[in-house]
Amino acid sequence: MDVAGVFDHYADSGPAATAVCILIDAAALPSVGVHGGIAGVVAITLDRYWMIVHPIHHRKYYRRWMFYAGLILPWLNGIVVTPLPSFGTTRIVDGKCYLLKFWPTHAMEQVCIHSYR
Image (cartoon, rainbow, N blue to C red; front, side, top):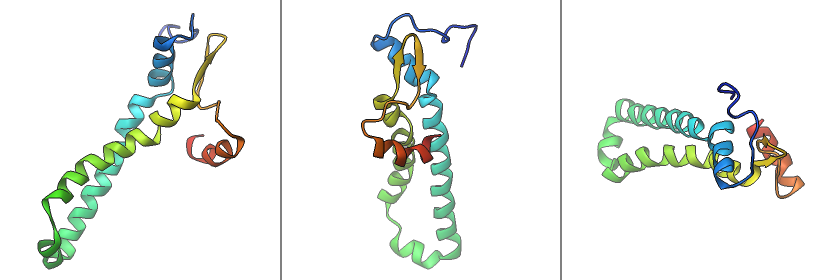
């Protein structure tokens, strides 16, 4: 993302620059919303399907904690999918932000390459 060249080159690789690199350049913040929103729509769709197609089963087995789980779990999914891997694998090298490039092991990189690229 280039906003008039602001994020084109990082002067240092300190904590603030790394946070901007991860949150803005790696698109960690927007991805939380996107993944959380999609998972939330899926949870609502499954709940409505259960309520309409199987109303007796829904009345018998639906509990209030299921509502809260349906609200919280999609957003936790959004946090787990992109920001957590970004924190460990994104670095600033020579003023450039390298997103998801520094995996701890080669095997982990091979497994995760299909999810993030």
